[in-house]
Length: 208
Ligand code: CTP
Image 1 (cartoon, rainbow, N blue to C red):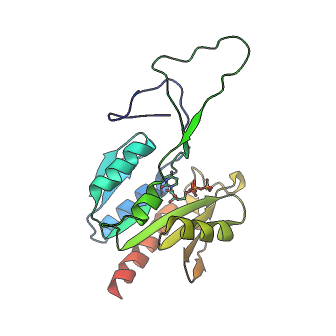
Image 2 (cartoon, helix red, strand yellow):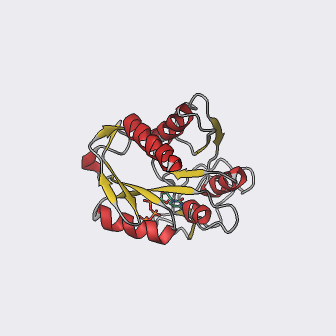
Image 3 (tube, rainbow, N blue to C red):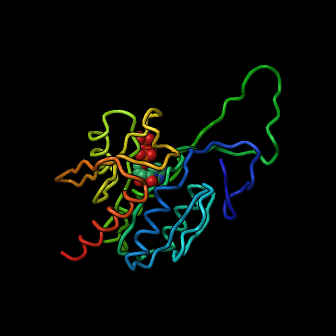
């Protein structure tokens, strides 16, 4: 697992991560900034350019991402679109792991912090609106509703990331916007249009 300045070791040769293009999260940050919001984007390694007009903080691990999100509080709105790795290797080595013999090594894993849940359940500085994402490959609506309840967020943007959908890494997305009491099925849109529509919904929410 990758690690950063406050967690040793850094720059591992071999690591465990979740794949993410970062396209949807970056588009949402840019769309909110375009509507006039003061936006801080905490971005993992994804190769997307920093959006214009957005303060971007680069991190490499889930623990760094949590620290950066906590440091950004207080906030009015938190949107959590990152594909955070659920696990990291316990006791990452300081040297490259060599192949010794024919038997693959067993790796002990430990759970990464749940950033969305931590911020959603923040005792003193919870953002007024917390929006999570749910990446599912089956039972999309049911699993996403369960995630909303488990993590304590207000809305969940759920999508089917099965390989056949082409959503992972692609430019288009088909999402459902879910709250505790309702859900909307959005048509297939570009990730830029999903971002613009979500940003507009967020702005409307604060008008009411
Ligand atoms: N998330 C997070 N921290 C984690 C894992 C997930 O903040 N350690 C956030 C994601 O950014 C997203 C939401 O939680 O907003 C749901 O992420 P997802 O990958 O769909 O689900 P998981 O929580 O990983 O649950 P599962 O693997 O059981 O589907």
